[in-house]
Image (cartoon, rainbow, N blue to C red; front, side, top):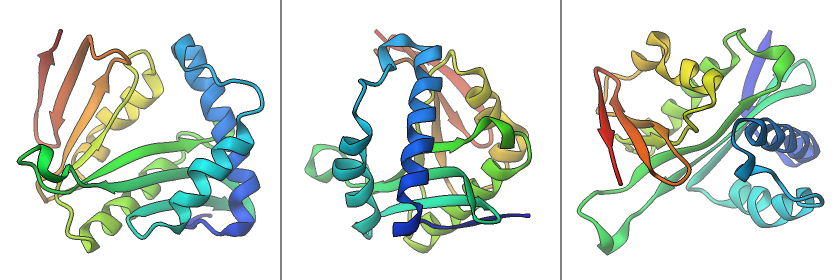
Length: 180
């Protein structure tokens, strides 16, 4: 049975390994995302550890026994005085290692993320997915994910790296939007 918990110090090495796997997977989809060798310590020091210490961030791990098989990183964004929009949630990463996909782990992590956003009074959630990432597009577009929220939650489900085109989806309907 897989368990989803908030990441702790002991999970950092496994999250770093999964992040590298995620970056290699992403580079296979779009080569511009290829990581530079030696970046794992930078990821840990400049991104993961600060995220784990910030109350407006949530880092989760999926455990199969003691083995970390997935992780997610979500955060609350504040556009400040630059836009009319209010604070919103952002699912930055949600990754499950290949051998554990299609077992409901991503859905469990997503449920925990939504609970956290709900507790923080966040009613809008956004995420980015590379259009060529078929597994992610399938996951985020699935009816079981799309119907999870009864709040006004929005997701950007397919946004090209250079914003050539993107799709804006609500959990109740999807409408294609193209940009320049």
